[in-house]
Image (cartoon, rainbow, N blue to C red; front, side, top):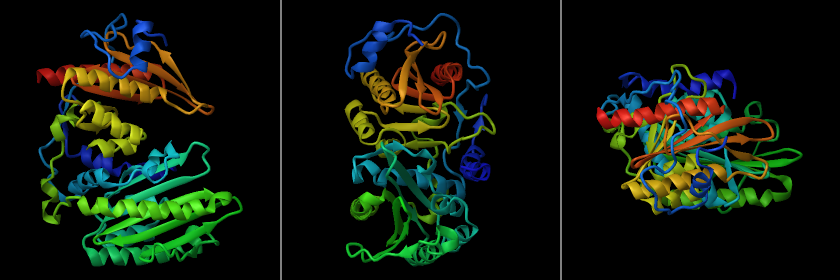
Length: 419
């Protein structure tokens, strides 16, 4: 992603952040206990699951105060962001289309809350797509994306909402024509008639090594967009994936309780006070995401798809809030302990070429597990934190950074209990 993209895509995070007032803004300590925690899902424990490493919590430069959010969006622009987040609960998971689509592709898994994110979704950046989105009143949507483990096939899928049926139909036609332009999609872009999808506008792009197929399908005031890319020796898979995605997506959209345009400003911002308990990104942080509260399916798009759906069901988890950390909520302490185990298990369940190595826990923070994540191309760190009926997941570039972020998250949890 170019620096221009990062700045433009972060617009949503800055917009939502502008609506809030911030009030203040390895080896484990017990290796045997920690290892057991990683490999089980229902274990009876005392209150101290994992003793804190020696020392005091050190949050570094992170804020340790919960954030104050307004009760409602306050205007239609922020309401469109929240409506887009709501739509995530009604968007097909790539793994439901094909179980092989498992690998995270988070750049294109995000709310699509207007013309600029729409252009980023379809063509990186494109002023013409932005104009089409503006002309047709594109106001909300959510996109999801995944790769296969061999990196030879991928899917990008989105449900997009427009101001009315006519606008969605106009957008489909104009976007299809624009994406067929060789200057946009390349000289091999061509219309493609798919007999099983007569209501869809489809085009293909062929190279020596792969075949991409993209479909735009109007569904009332929605537009369903699916892009699949497959190697030439699996060309039929692309058509089958398009068909199955559309088959699954249409009934989901029929169940979505769309918010009336004049009620977008009244959408609640922070469900169950979840966002106020998450760690905030520092001002101007690179890669900042739009703060959000998701249900099980919304969380599944961002984490481990089908396993996340099962995790929510098995542990009675209700929501996941996302800002600089992921925070899950369940209904009782024993369920939270099981949820903690499942989050840790997801952290450890990586591809064969990714090494997950236990790391020391953050000083002064009980009930935390940390890992170094080493790939052939990069290193990162992650921690899980259990606090009462909440579980937090922290992802950073270094173990030191993970320790500071986890300490800050722990202190936010404590402060939220006393405010």
